[in-house]
Image 1 (cartoon, rainbow, N blue to C red):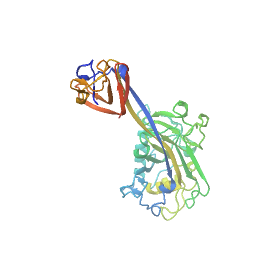
Image 2: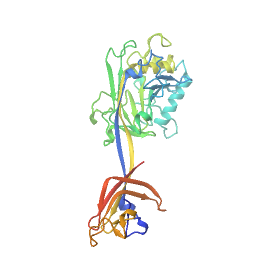
Image 3: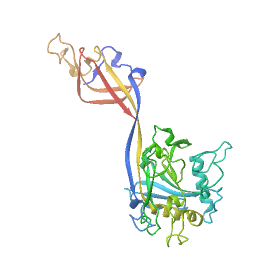
Image 4: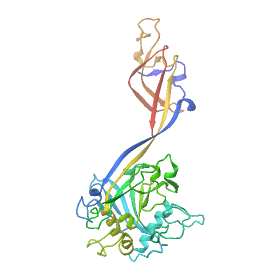
Length: 374
């Protein structure tokens, strides 16, 4: 039954923005487990699984949770690899320009520029002015990086801080999990403790990955020895070092060269596709909680005791008498079934339906809470 306001012209009651509305942000989280069986060897024979799509220019691979040609497939992440053009550790002999360009693409976006407007390389301290030494020499700057860029379908608005972990097998390529796995995580990070993460990146907050899953601030690494995870951007960057990948990243006839190579050697002598395939073959699992930010505006629609006690519905009266009255002296009453929100031109923009009618009369007041999500 439509209800009219007997005190306001045309039945509309203005809302006071300062008293009758409030904006609310709600964070929804969903746990996302990715097993190594999805990342490698489930949908065909490595490295030609049907859920792995190779870029035509050999710059990255895209991983789906089902054969990518199927309408049921969901893109879950991309993987690529880059090498700094400024590194003094080594100079790649294969796909040098592509590796340098990919590294620069990511470091200018995720690390940023120093005071002289020079691009700062990835480094273990997360500083914009790191010492000019490279990680292979116990230095600061990182030469080679494997990038895992999660899709928005998977991470939504961001990766929830303190929930990310990745387990990597450190054995030989033939049995990467045979010697066990190393688990890296940001479990030490908390949004309420600024000492457990960094926020000097153009892409938002990020955490150094710790070895293990200790969920206390005391476990916060002093430096990023293995890699970092960017929460809002949904990127995991893993350093091309034995500490992260073990002593053998690639080996065998599926790679060129086919001899066993460490991560650093593979970055020098192998293609981006080979590096990435070796990396994904070593991943045992990835797990995190995504975040969906639900922005809402709540309207408090108030009906005072002397408002909205009559209805514009034709069935409200019969023979000029209010049909819901038993006696002529009885107070009028209505039954509220919906609430309409109107713009300043009195055009309806939203309507909310109640689960059951609410009685309204001069003897009571109502406050109806209407929430719009956007």
